[in-house]
Image (cartoon, rainbow, N blue to C red; front, side, top):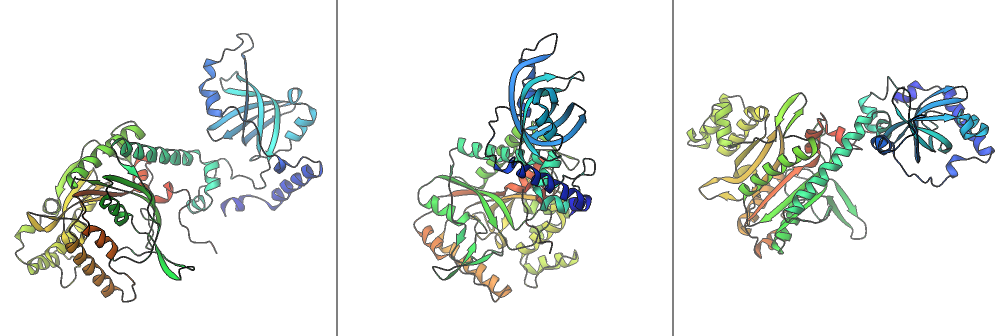
Amino acid sequence: MEQNQNQSTNELEVRREKLAALKAAGEDPFEKTKYPVTDTAAEIVAHFEEIKSDPETGLVGKTVRIAGRMMSRRVMGKASFLHLMDGSGQIQLYVRRDDVGDEAYAAFKKWDIGDIFGAEGFVFRTKTGEVSVHATSITLLAKSLLPLPEKYHGLTNTDMRYRERYVDLIVNPEVKDTFVKRSQILRELRAYLDEHGFLEVDTPILTPFEIGASARPFKTHHNTLDMDMFLRIETELYLKRLIVGGFDRVYEVGRIFRNEGMDTSHNPEFTSIELYQAYTDYHGMMDLVMDLYTRLAERVCGSTKITYQGTEIDMGHWEKLTMVEAVKKYAEVDYYAWQTDEDARAAAKAHHLEIPSDATKGTCLIAFFEAYVEDKLVQPTIIYDYPVENSPLAKRKPSEPAFTERFEYFIYCREMGNAFSELNDPIDQKERFERQVAAKRAEDPTTTARVDDDYVHALEYGLPPTGGLGFGVDRLVMLLTDSPSIRDVLLFPTMKPID
């Protein structure tokens, strides 16, 4: 481990010896149960100008009580300067022997960087202009037995930063800023949907069987029921059951689990949001996406124009193209020129695309889109009217049954979300489920996937015309915090054990 490489065995022993000495003297810091904090570093600095000070001495009458971790210290005989870091930031403290007492000051000089302590004192500004706290009493609250990484070398190994996020948060303040902003994004998401009449709900994480969707689930076993169960790969089917039951607008923010690969935009465990609105369609979902993302950029980043990995993204301007239009624009291939599936396969082969031997026109269109279009969609773009071949839950277009009322939207060449006019025909839905399960069994004969008959049963009671939308919260946070990897926006990303 990086910090273990930088620390000597001697230093570890010394810290433990100091703890042993404290315990022997009846001053075990770990026995302290609380400290009455009244102020934070950020509050003290922010409100300093509001506090009246003595014009001659510069001293301020306000007494404060703060607590946090010692990040640096400069001992100058009978007085010392140090920096305390709490949850809000850092502030300088001035500790003088004459104020805290000989015994307390002698004990303080034995403290280590990383120790957690409390301090009471009054606020003042130093001759260099730094807002500080002049301590009148100090209390050790927890002993740090491991030294922090060096100030200028820090915890820079990316793998170790993810594994030891607790150290990363201490020594890299900008990391904490990312997760503060993540929390803000979630608050704004919920506030927007709540204001628009959506109800937040919770649906099961454990499901009784594997559905026929393409994502691979995690499998577990319930001992009492003596049955296999699966961690959910989506929340869609339960949420639409609620629309059948009479809720007109519902949403869920929750963890999703997929037993698949990992890269800069995929983690096996991630956060998604899905929402469903009765009596609207995918055009209504388009309007919601554009309005929501514009508002999030303004509220979280202060402008509709943000920068992601050096590229300016205008969240206030969206392009809309059908998949057919996008392929024609970027690949210069016209779907409507194909008369048969064979024509489509010939065009795909001429462009060196890998396709199944029985590929349909719709399958070939998707292949062209993935090969020629996705990496061009830097600015916010909505791609709509997807082929029925890869849209098992979307309603067909009445005017073009080969296509569905589905869209995905892309930013910085990355798919950010997916939406449909929801399929509400139970007969059509069951047939699509059956085809989906058959395809999965052909691909993997050991699969236990089956049709969700209860969902079909729910549809038979009647699902009103409904628009649905789902998107990954982590990718949204990546975008709005300018983070290159999904691991940068997950406090504890999935990691392979070191041993």
